[in-house]
Amino acid sequence: MMSIFNPEQWSYNHFKNGSFGDSRRTDRVIEVAADMARCSGKSIALSCRGNEAKVEGAYRLIRNDNISPEVIRASGFQHTAELAQPYAEILAIDDTTALSYKHQVAQELGKLGTTTDKSRGWWVHSTLLLDSFTTQTIGLIHQEYWLRPNNPEDADEKESGKWSEASYFCRQRLGDIMSRVISVCDREADILSYIQDKQKHNERFVVRAKHSRTLIETDATLFEHLESQAELGEYTIDIAQKGTKNSKGKPVNRVARKAKLTIKVAQVTFKTKGETQPVNVVYAQEKTSKSVTEPLRWVLLTTEPIDTLIQALHIIDIYTARWRIEDFHKAWKTGAGAERQRMTEPKNLERAVSILAFIGVRLLQLREAITLPYYLRKKGLLEEAKAVEAQRCDTVLEEDEWKVLMWFNKPRGHKGKGAPSLKWAYQSIAKLGGFTDTKRTGIASWTAVWEGWSTLQSHVVGYRVAKEMIADGESL
Image 1 (cartoon, one colour):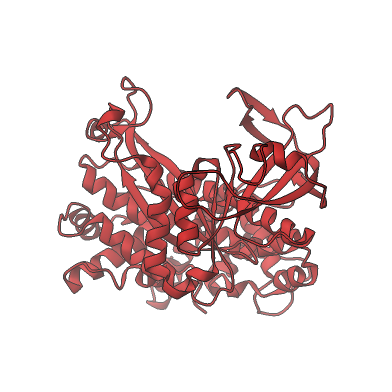
Image 2: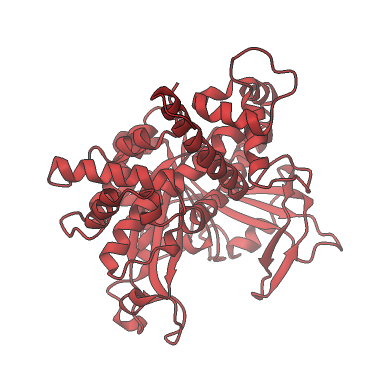
């Protein structure tokens, strides 16, 4: 059985329809991307595993000005659009990150911090599609790269337009199924022009509010008005331990806790010069406690219905999925190694990191394929979670992969020649990556899963070489 993470098939699916101008270029993109996916996090030279012809071909591709980074990305976006078709409700998570470099190419890239910073690079706005039901990643549907000038006055346009730009391209790529898409954004997207653009196109959104605007319905501002509303109900969520920043921007250590939130809702209309429509609002406020210095407070602007507590909780559930794009950024920059690339020309570097963006998504999907029960349990779907855990792991792993994995961690009570369970595979791969479950969550980080997966793949390569030698009659 072919693994859903087979690098050759994965690469073919993503780049077969790229408008590269020549079938040989398409074949080369597919081959290079497959090698990079197989050896994620490694340099392009290492991904070719000593094959000098492959190394030469890979760098010829990266330096080929006839293959634009935009076309590479467009091919991957098209595949994501195809994958999205069956889903009943889709979350489009938007966010911006920076790709940072200090080597020779940095002088030709844009400002990230102050003008004296040695690090320079791109700002990249990405849109990641998730299945609303399981919050599993469908794929990357949009990315916009830009270089920030040293003098902000030299910018061609305001960066605030990136939110509406992302919606425009999602609209073009997804077509009719855009009616099933909910855009999910943090406070940076709380811009009237963006809200009005979404309303104009009858598109759905959940945006965390930053501004307490004046309202048509009352003399009170938005936040004041919400405080005066009656409670719709309560909700308890688990807050994970995390290093974060307080309201003054100072680093703090957020301890794990259970947060009890009161839920309020309202429908409001913002007072503005341009045309505007009513917006639904969900207000989630953590009950005060002496042990909590920064209580949780979310004000969520949305097009979704808010008539019942269940509907309001669904909106909160949607917003809590927003952190998944931060995981994508980690997977892209660290796991796939986007910030470790050392090409000396900006376009060459952009071609490489464009391929690596989809490899970053692949890393997320690897983890999610074996942690789906965790997400199902969070939604209260206990029986569904148990059913997934009991599945044979050959729904994810190829035969060579799970057989090699059994050498490291033979499952207790396993009988016969069939593949063990998916739960066993997840635990075994995580252990290979150094996971010890010190927090007693049972959930390994994506980095631990990827380290385990990378270690497994190294041993699988050796296993396959040994099998070929034996088949050819050679002695080991």
